[in-house]
Length: 465
Image (cartoon, rainbow, N blue to C red):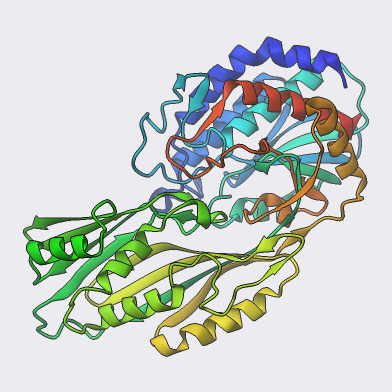
């Protein structure tokens, strides 16, 4: 290992923390309503992209903005390029934070804020890793390029745009998952069920509207339904009967009774770590009298098919393999009114399984609902052979820097690596740490920020020296 790189990171660290705090303060959430040809994903994401590119320019790196879709900063020389794939867009903050989600507050040795671990903190760490390599004047034979995406949390339109316009790396990594090294990523399948209702038809009791979830790749921690024609007392008694006092609340409004369900947020690739508020709400609604409405029938059918499972067993899609483990399913977004209902799902399936077969099984499982089945996204799995040369180099660096075994892992999460050949995920979450991406009070510890910057500096240099 090159001691000078570690020394440089120590010298830069206070500056790195201040810059990450500043970066977190930009709420770079997708804003389709304000998107245009100048800001393809909205002005705040564009602001964040320009911020990181400007930092790279200040450090003396080569930089390029690819029409607001992506950008890069680059150091080194030579015909070959190693890529580091990161993103600067974040999921919505959601509710329940104990700090300002866009404040970048440092408290108890941690930097809090949306994006601190996913993926602004690691992006800043890589930026300073590149600075350490450049200013150490160590000899290199290749270029290192930090490729910065802006739409990773939604459609990955950014990386697709980059691949159409720019040079491909010979190999690389993404600082957007877990250590040691992830060489397998499950397939990602996102689909929607849309059901049209024939109206309330003078019903005395009916569902006026229902909403839950913010993004399909997040286990929803809140969901609510507005019911007309039922009393607060009836619902309060039912809540007590079902022993749901901690999870379901009701309040009276001029429009009817508002039912609120509370769950626990988690990343959709780890739905077992959360508690799905939409499913809690659906289970409760399936147990109360809604006058035999179509919405009630639809909800009751969904409850029976999902059965509060995260592996799709009742749906007939449960499967697993030795490389990547079990299939997972998450009901991420629900949106109902008196005339229609929409449900959006996220599935992560094992790397050896055929995703098209899962789609056919889902169509069959939902066929009796009379709902429209729409595949919104299908990302094929990723698998890189363990004996690949660049993986061996990353393993060497991880072992030297941590003393731990550099095991190869698989995840349910999706990174840019599945789009770029010969790339794997490499950090930033260390073994045994809780996954905080997409959760309230997201943070990265100061100790870990410094540690990952040093690991990335050593790894990048190993790949380009």
